[in-house]
Image (tube, rainbow, N blue to C red; front, side):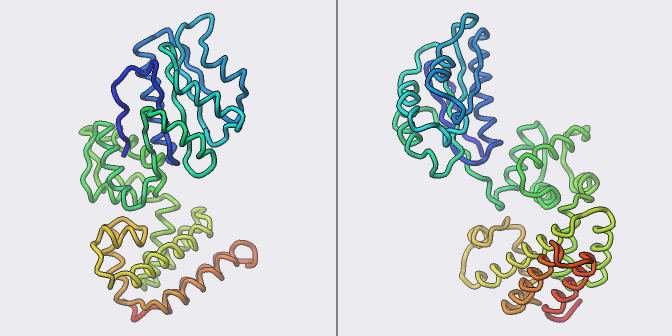
Length: 329
């Protein structure tokens, strides 16, 4: 997921970190700073936000201090750099000098792309940090578990993503917690269920799974339990909408003769989710999915202010969505 930074001296060099995945960007910068400080323990570490600097503060930050001959300068949010400072920053990056280790961080996107393109032409050390796609999250869990000196199999990695969600920071924290409580540093599915089975996200998606599968008693029971334990009603409609959209995309794309990995990428789900969607597709038609999505949209508007009893509105939409599918099991 994260390309290693070249093992050259950070001083006299520039690290350019680009992309929206802030966790990976922070790790790349932390590695760069750690190597610089390990090489020159007396170096001053200065961090600046590009949008809050002027010509004087930028020059001062790069020029060392009375107490340190070397400087490690980290400039974040390059997209916010004032246009009038672009020449100064590019000149600094073009000739940082032997006493400066310079890390520049751009969050991706078109804003500030002109200065980013100029910096790329200087051939700095580059680490790209794209967003982690849904289908890559189990691989991220496996890689992160190894990074934390643990072990995990593919099924457990997928279960953890299903339980905790798609936020990489939450996944990293969950892995750390599970490993800290495992004497053999092994992640297991029972441990995932034990620690994270009560999360709001899990509860809402569990309701949605029962709804799309036509399990009325299970869906209504889980819904009432979720609401009684404080799960926001909007999470339930969000989970229903997300599952229905994925199912609709699967119904549209399953006959395209794509490989599972390609089909999963088109739908926006991990490949292991295709088995669930294939199972559900036996009882759903595209027109039924569209009708169910409309019902969920109405319920979502109701629970956001138009309904006096969100719980009743959710129970009604559960019944309506189940009524859209084929024969119940």
